[in-house]
Amino acid sequence: MIGIVGGVGPLAGLDVFKKIIEETVALKDQEHLPVLLSSQPQRIVDRTNFLVGKEPTNPAYAFLEIIKELDAAGAQIAAIPCNTAHAPAIFDPLRAALNTPPLSIRVLHLVEETAKFIQQQYAGHKIGILSTTGTRDTGLYTKMLEQHGIESISPDDVLQEKVHQAIYNESYGIKAYSSPVTTHAKEDLIQVVEELKNQGAQVIVLACTELPLALTEKTYFGLPTVDPNRVLARALIQHVAPEKLKPL
Amino acid sequence: MIGIVGGVGPLAGLDVFKKIIEETVALKDQEHLPVLLSSQPQRIVDRTNFLVGKEPTNPAYAFLEIIKELDAAGAQIAAIPCNTAHAPAIFDPLRAALNTPPLSIRVLHLVEETAKFIQQQYAGHKIGILSTTGTRDTGLYTKMLEQHGIESISPDDVLQEKVHQAIYNESYGIKAYSSPVTTHAKEDLIQVVEELKNQGAQVIVLACTELPLALTEKTYFGLPTVDPNRVLARALIQHVAPEKLKPL
Image 1 (cartoon, rainbow over the protein chains, first blue to last red):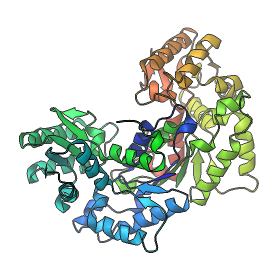
Image 2: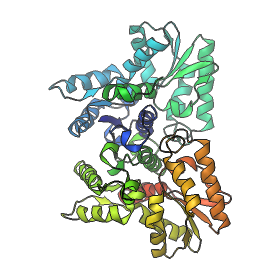
Image 3: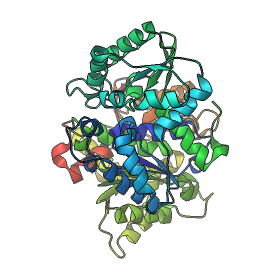
Image 4: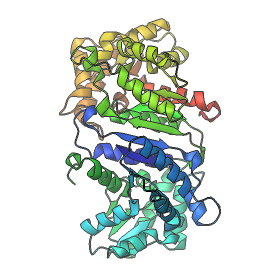
């Protein structure tokens, strides 16, 4: 069984689950893979707030408890569809706690899986990164891509504020208005993609799990988008039932 | 916590979960409600096959086991987003088993919640019912609506076959091709709605949880659609956090 830690944000867990269904070879209900999605948003403090020092509690411990629950329920593999949760300040203590004593459940690293995918598909390309400010400031994607031999660029402060507001703003951001996403959020994001293209980006990583809800096309201005949630969904299937993974 | 028995079909559980998020008043992650979605399609035989005698095992017992797991995990209320699962031949033994000994979790009845909603919103209207053949032949909606004082009509055998194939056909049905739904499935369903309108229907109930994936508009030929999954999502919120339920 696949486990998903949901609630970060609420739609991101559903998004990965939907992509697991989309990427699975199955013609009837019974051929789909078992999945347990545990969405406990009230237990998990905002990841960005923790990274920027506005929130003292490390969300790693809430993630640990939920992963233990997924393990006890029979999940062999799990993932957290929240990029910011993979910052070392959160993911490193989580990984350490998962290993002492070792749980049988394995937890995939969203950013590492994405970097591996980009290395396979877009070696030699310059990658533009759209993310929360928390993710950008930790250099999470930049460093992971660098470790995989991939060059990247991130928005400058003015553009970054546009991206961050498109996600978090309480009057038009995706976290508050996701179904449908507001035109304001969508247009701001598209403008940032265009600017990153002008600065040399050849591929865009949608490095916050809310972003694919707004940027739903496969390309913008000719730049292909990489959706870490879809990469993650495929990696989860690959681990539990490789024979059911659809070809790319 | 809200529990959802998923996997019947796989997208229907996600659909109810998404509608819970949409119908909840929340401006940030932490304000959303805790939800546990357990999708175990391999454990649950096809409900229609059981009702028409092609499958000997009653899926009620698999539903019972999953509901017990949701109860043990802390869910106070649960639902099964599959109309066919609410046929008396399946739901009655499930309800009996849930009461001996009584579990603390409460399980909402999808069809009963829908009939209550129609009674409140569309009293005096004639209701057209789109469903699987299993659901139609058991008279599940017809009888429940009648008990709530509501008149309804169902497709004749020729039209019903179109609806059933739009759901089940392995080359174009919604269960095999749901994201996106095929034009073939969508057009056949719209044609059946038009025929039901000609026969006097004033409101259309999408009485199989796959149907709202194909019929996404609020009205067809002026007939409003009722989506039992959205009705169910609202009833679940009403039970755990009425103050967070969005106004209609």
